[in-house]
Every structure is written in C-alpha cells, then in structure tokens.
Figure 1 (cartoon, rainbow, N blue to C red):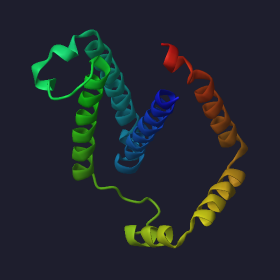
Figure 2 (cartoon, one colour):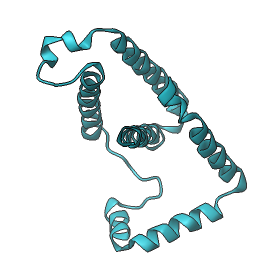
Figure 3 (spheres, one colour):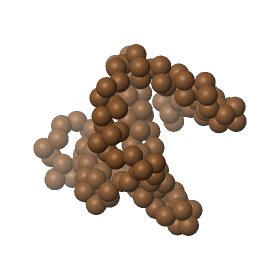
Length: 157
C-alpha cells in the first residue's frame, strides 16, 4: 500500500513539474515562437524518456560515484533523477523571470492569495469549474478519465 501511494505521489509531483514547464512556454515565449518552443519541449521530453530507459538497462549499482547511496538499481536511478531535476529546475528558476499577461503585479497577486482562506480557495475553484466553457470541461473530463484508466498500467509495465 505504501508503495502504491508513493508511486501515486511521485506521479502527481512529476505531472505538476511538467505542467509548470509547459506553462513557462506560454508565459515567457513570444506568441510567434510558441509552436517552436513547444516542439523543442516535446523533443527534449522524449529524449529524457529515452535516456531514462537506457539508464535502466545499465548496471547502475556498480557505478563507484553512486556508492554512497544504498539500495539497488531503482533507488540509484531515483537519486540520479532527483539531482538532475534539482539542477535543471534551479537553473530555470534563476534564469527565467515570469511576467503576468494580465498586468497584475506579483505583490497584488500574492496579497490576494494571502487573504483567501481554504474555504474561499475551494469556492473559487468550484466557481471556475462551473463557469468554464462546456468544451473545456469535456476536455478536462477526458483527461481525468484517461489518466485514471491508464494509471494502473504504469504499475504493470
């Protein structure tokens, strides 16, 4: 049970990281360059998946520079991924400055966030869900149902 919950938490965390990476394409890249940036994101994501697959085929536990970690292949691969993600996300945080397209300053957005309680946030989320266009809501349903249907296959594969 702990393993399933841990894998689920990891999947949610990685999806959140991927979503913010895709959001940066919208927030930082000029509109004319967004298709190119999205294509590069897809290529690099596929390259990272391929690298992970190839690393899984190697004998990672025998690498001397990972001797300080305990465990077998999966734990050592997890350490590699954690370090690489930490470095890449840190570089992104330092190098990219996000700007709001609405003209709102960071201080005004942060002030609104701090004044909202938990109940108000859930209420705002519910209101947003109910007021979104039907087509967008259908896409959300398809995404959620597809994810829930395909999620068990990640344990079987």
